[in-house]
Length: 304
Ligand code: ADP
Image (cartoon, rainbow, N blue to C red; front, side):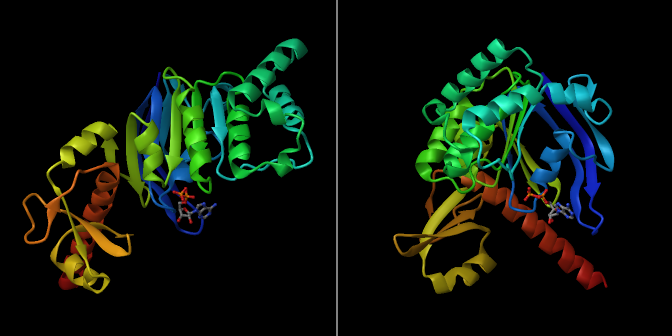
């Protein structure tokens, strides 16, 4: 099973180029689509979920063209959108039962088994008679996964599912996702690096509608080993360091500013080598892109 995305582009009527020639191959397993807010993740997810069309390009789920065979794709699809709305005054059981009917599970006995099974799987069985309107953010998202799993989908798309969850619920949600099964394609769109680091065996980073990095998290981490350097600085020195080094991240740690720098060789006094992680991979990809864009705009300004 494979999802092949080729040269997808989408411009909204306000002129925003949300997707800019996206080409990606997504194999079975958990795939992390990582990028900052506004990168184009939801646009891509909605396109793959057959809810909107791209202007150009194609996406195929094995041999099925997503744009021309929407019904076929929908039968194989489970989707948890970013803004998943719930009817507040309905119980979890009744609402899931309702979604199951919409999914075509007509047989009452079978439907009961499926609904109860999913409520168990998502740890909501003991609150099945409670109104979903009273659910916490984590419970809502677990309910969202339960509805996405109805009908045993082969392609599961979850868009920013952990935003706003507390750490305990995030772990719970991660465990739930990791149990879904490696023979399905699960696309997890997120701006949280940890989500991808914890769960995904393949990933892509997108920014401003373009893929800027793709690969396997562990290999990408391997590739940056030996090139990430750290040191504590005064907060007031940050701009100076940014002008002299490729600073990929800065963060407050115990009240002090810790910077990570990307460099092939030891950058000099005060720096020690850091164990590179997926956050360094992500931030170095973003910093490299920014440096390229700055160089291009500077040279075009000079030319003008
Ligand atoms: P992400 O999910 O990565 O945050 P989106 O796909 O939501 O990114 O948005 C990509 C870009 O497209 C953003 O600049 C956003 O403001 C814009 N955008 C998204 N939806 C619409 C829309 N319906 N009309 C116009 N612009 C949109």
